[in-house]
Structures are given as structure tokens and as C-alpha cells.
Amino acid sequence: MSPSPARSDSPHRPDRPAPRDLSDRPASQDLPDRPASLHLPAGTAARGPYAVDIDPARAGWTYSALRVLTLGPGEIHSFGSGDSEWVVLPLSGACSVRVDGEIIELLGRASVFDGVTDFAYVPRDAHAQIASGAGGRFALAGAKCERRLPARYGPAPEVPVETRGSGNRAREVRNFASADAFDCDRLIAVEVVTPGGNWSSYPPHKHDEHRPGTESVLEEIYYYEIEGPHGVAYQRISPSRPGGADLLAEVRDGDAVLVPDGWHGPSIAQPGHALHYLNVMAGPGPEREWKICFHPDHTEGYA
Image 1 (tube, rainbow, N blue to C red):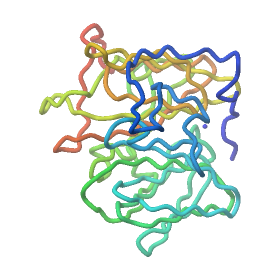
Image 2: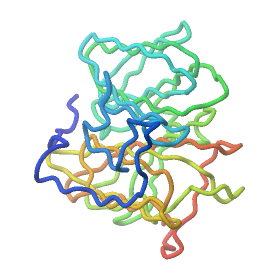
Image 3: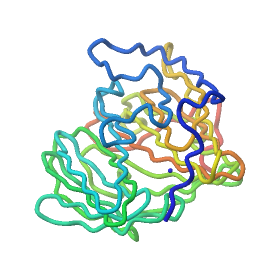
Image 4: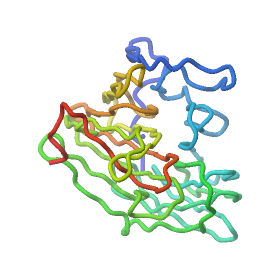
């Protein structure tokens, strides 16, 4: 979300409960692809070759973007990076990334539940090709940016991994493109793996105000994969201001959630089904930083 975790249903399965979405974000006539909901079930954000294609216009914001690409054995995908920087992150399988005259070989992994992976950085204003001999699935985490940095290889052994929280709030955070781990212009991206039955993205926190040294403004995308068939998880976003984002959704393998503002968390994993989510963030701040504020009613911290 060898084999990817089984996809448990289609996005139109009749017994799938409708998400509670009180986001009050009507679609704009100028943005026909903008989703009516913050919750994008698997398949609803597909476009062209991508199983997920969330660009800033579709999300209704300015910076953050995510694509998920599936390649069959021997297939090649070409794309222009445009005004955005991208990280190519294998979800399952291996690939090569050709960019700026060099080829970056990614060993990848069997699935997101098999540990960290290497990755490739594709700068803005570039032409890139992704090729996979055996096939696989690849995330492209992106952000609109200003600086053009060099194309680079991100080795798996250099990805900082931390255990955050304890007890039934413990989870593993893979900081492959966090603000202090890998140089990007605006993009911040991490993976989180939560054991079945645990809570993560907890305590609820936000990053929707510019308060130097305390909080940074970041648009955020969650993309979920769930281990094993028929797995589900739950995602909460609550308003940090009147009329702000408000969502309680049952999420499944391949779903995505947009966080334009608000307190987000918890993300709750079903017992027996580990939960993986990819977080993609970017914002307008003068510094590339992840500064968050915890909900005042929850003071547990990360311990």
C-alpha cells in the first residue's frame, strides 16, 4: 500500500461508511478538479498514469503535491518536474531514475512494511525518467519551490529512524526528507509506521500559523497503506479556528487525506493491521522547518 498489501476494496464499495467531512471548503469554479472532501478514497484522486495525483490546484492550496505511480515490468515513465522539486520514493520494488544526465539506481524494498528505502531527489525545471525492470509502485512527493538544487541519491542507511511515543502510542518515524535530515528547498516528507491497535499523530497538533520559533505554516498530505487484507484505520482533523478543517474518516489502503489547517490526529490503526502513512508537507515560510503546536486539551507530549 515482493507483494504490496492486499487492496481490500474499491472506493465505491457499498458497505464503506461515508466520511464525516465538515470542512466547508466548496469547490471553486476556477479549480474543477478540487475535491469536495478532505478524504480522497483510493481511486478518486487517480489521473493519467497516476493512482494518486494531488497537485496544489486539486488540493486548493499552493505548495504540496503527491503522485503514486505503478509500473509494470520493463515500463518507463517520463515527467517534467516543472516548478516543483520531487522525491522519488519506492513503495514496493526497485527502479532507476534518470535526471540531469545521470542515472540514480534505487534498490527499493518489498513493501513499506519492510523498512526504510533509498530515494532520489529530482530538482525543479528538470526532465526525469523512472524505469523499473521488475515493476513496482513509487511515490513522488513534491513541493512548489524557488531554488533549483542538484539531483541527488538518498541512501537508506542515512535515513534517520526514531521511535516516537510509548505504549499504545508508539510508532516508527522514518525521516527521509525531514527538515533537518535532507536538503530541499520547501519539501518536507516522512514516513510513519504504526503497529496495529496503536494511536499515532498524537497528541493532536497543528501547523497553520506563522509564529517564529514556535509554529510554521505547512500544507500536509497523508497517504495510507495498511498491512493485510480488509484493514482499516481512522483519521481525525478538528478545527483550530471557526470554519476550519473538520474530518473523521475511516481510511483504507490507497486513501489520502488533505490537511490544509487544523488539529490533526489521532491516526488510529486497527488491531492486527499495521498502518503506514506518508506525510508530504510544504509551506510559505522563510525557513524550511517543522514547528508544531499541541492541542491545549492534550498535554501528553510524545512520551
